[in-house]
Length: 75
Image (cartoon, rainbow, N blue to C red):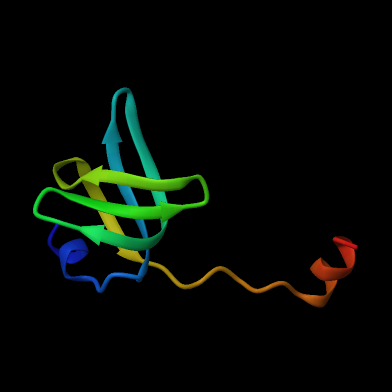
């Protein structure tokens, strides 16, 4: 996917890719990239995605920060 290969490392991305039985997404910073794969650091760890399995990818903004209401709820 051309756009994904041009994004700077560290960019927060969402990558949709094919897996057996359907599709799945990887969301997080783009950590590595070579001619055949890209690596996204998700909440569950590093996910290595074959570029030929990618069907869509785009940069996304950072997650929203905690609000005062959220902080109080977590006390």
